[in-house]
Image (cartoon, rainbow, N blue to C red; front, side, top):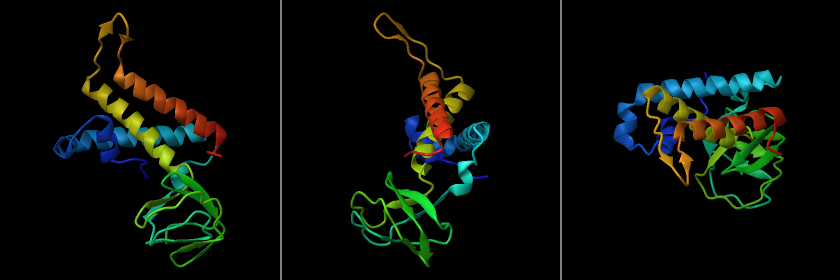
Length: 181
């Protein structure tokens, strides 16, 4: 099974340091697995292919300028043809591949530095954020860490519920639209 985020992403939502993430590793993995299943199911509910079949990740092999028509990858073996993807959230498409190069590229709208993450699946960067929100919410629920504070100006503060609601809302939008365009 493909997971859409990792313990570093979820740990950042929970303000965990490396040692805390390591100590909570199995619990974080369970929360990430649950969020990934929910993401796949939401796409199926809308009659769409699960996005986990459309993702691959590597890094740029050299800097890239806006408008580039070829993208050099560190390792392009897992990238399909044709495809859509993103570089640091900058969505683009390609029509061919030669070794570790994506060719026939369109849509690069900004310059990108060497070593920056390149992901197949135009929604990969968004799904990572959605997965981290949902996983953090599940972790909080499982740990019983809900903190309810009543304040006359702020009402009830429910951090886990807020993350879950935000993740579910964004997930429903993605699954319904099927694209970030």
